[in-house]
Image (cartoon, rainbow, N blue to C red; front, side, top):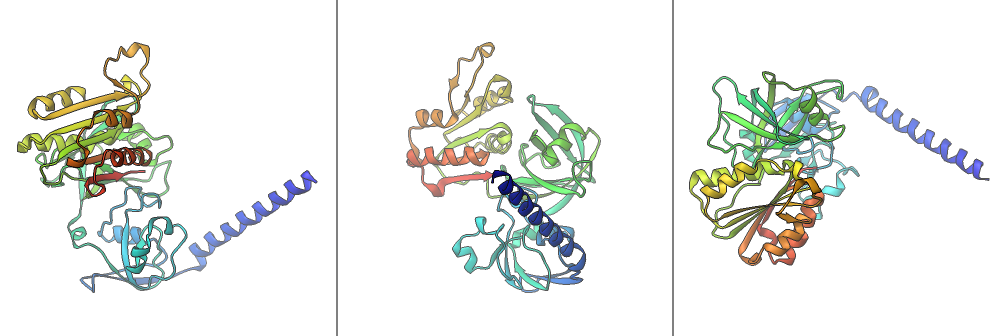
Amino acid sequence: MVITLLISIAVISLISVFLALLMVIADATIGNYGIVKISINDGTKELEVKGGQPLLKALNQEGVFIPSACGGRGSCGLCKVRVVQGGGEYLPTELPFINEEEKKQQVRLSCQFKVKADVAIVIPEELFSVREFITRVERIRDLTHDIKEVTLRLKNGETITPLAGQYIQFKVPEYENTEESVYRAYSVASPPDDNTRVELEIRLVPNGICTTYVHTILKEGDEVTINGPYGEFYLRESDRNIIFIAGGSGMAPIKSILMDMAQKGINRKAMYFFGARSKRDLFLLDEMRALEQRLPNFTFVPALSEPVAEDNWEGETGLITDVVRRMVKDGPNSEAYLCGSPGMINACMTVLNELNVAPENIYYDKFS
């Protein structure tokens, strides 16, 4: 009986795989959609592209860059555009990221929506100012055992002017881990006034296409294509206290904001909670202490969740959320800036809600 059941399951699985393969082949070969037209913002810009490809990819190839932190894998939900004509039915892969109000506005996930016929879309006007830049790797240095700092120098005397905290998209060329070039999003760690270079902090993710490329192949002197800037993660103008929370390479945008505050003389009360597992995961401590000297109302609070004996650690310990809960005293008069994994962001949101930080005063880029 058990053997018969297992055989049945195996047969059904094989049939499902075979049918899925047929669908992929049919879409790639039989489904020849020819050239289709994309009308943007009531005809402000019109494109002719090869049909059958994701809208995100089609736009990128024509120099219209839509933000996508995951590089088009359908896991970040950032690459939303309004498809006001020719949209068709929603795909299951879109629905987790689209709420009911967005459905009414015909918002689609551009990395999942394939352009198979003429469409009309609406995108924010500011995306027309996003540009592509050719850079050269000026320096690569190890910050920790799994985080590298990559400094890119813009070529041909060009400049880039992101707001402190925004991010760029890094183009990874074809190599053994990817059959086509892909984009990945990384926050800019350098301050805006240093506008001829872009500094990134890139953490190695096992089997990550971009992080593997950066950590094992990329070298100083190589050419790298980026585009940007993007993002709503930047310091708001107010007199509220500031709570920064980050872990790992989430240091990057907060470092940029702090350096920008120091350069502009913004001296609001600010606390930066940085979570790490052990002492070997901490970095840029000297830079943070230097910023404490330049910003009299700024306090840097590193915390270790799993310190080992040889760390001889005398600072804060425990989960960073517990440290925040202990040390933040005036939540209602604060705004928070978070950068880290989706899990960390969600945990911090819970604690900040407990501390009565207004949800509209919490800002984050949830890179996944």
